[in-house]
Amino acid sequence: MLDHLPENTQGRDFLIGDLHGYHQVLMQALDEVAFDSGTDRLISVGDLIDRGPDSEACLKLLEEPWFFGVQGNHERFLLCSVAGDEALRRTWILNGGRWSSHYSDAELQQMADLIDEKMPLALELTVQDKRLGIIHAEVPEDNWQKLQSWTGEISSELVDILTTRRQRIRNQLQLPVQNIDAVACGHTLVETPLRLGNVHCLETGICAPHLRGYLTLIEARDLLLP
Image 1 (cartoon, rainbow, N blue to C red):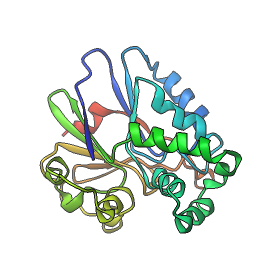
Image 2 (cartoon, rainbow, N blue to C red):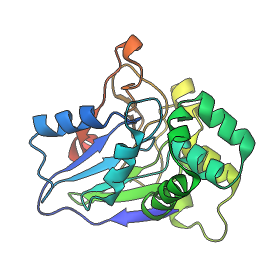
Image 3 (cartoon, rainbow, N blue to C red):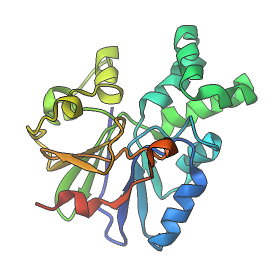
């Protein structure tokens, strides 16, 4: 459900919006900020895969000790498809998953195992004594404590809230998420990074070049400014 990252006292922490297979674009962006893989960390708000040119390379970032991320709805497509959900597999193929046809069932299972092992549904990060929550879509009941105190089975409804819901951005809700200093999310395309209450929407559409979309890369500490 929720993993915690300790404060990075040696370097910087960066966040990226939905990557969607654009591995080379990410590498160029990291070069531009002189990213140091020995001390810096990179955290994804989900949707590493689909639509772009190299989903496999983006997933393999999870094997790097400096890379972290939460599950998005596109990772859920892969997980559920590998688990045998044929209806969702058809939805996945129509929404950028055609690349998966080039891989064997065993290879896709390995990708699913990597997602299961390395991508929780939510992350919490400490930055200069403040707390930053990271999810793909929305926080249940706009209360981070709901994730901190969750026990038992993870319901499909909760997964849907965390990976697919869009109520805050559709309704431009400014009410802050309680019991956390700030939250970063992706999922819904915005022209530029958007702040709603204490929630930062970072999906600026690298997979939508026809809309002049681009990849957002931002330091975590900048999301915690007043």
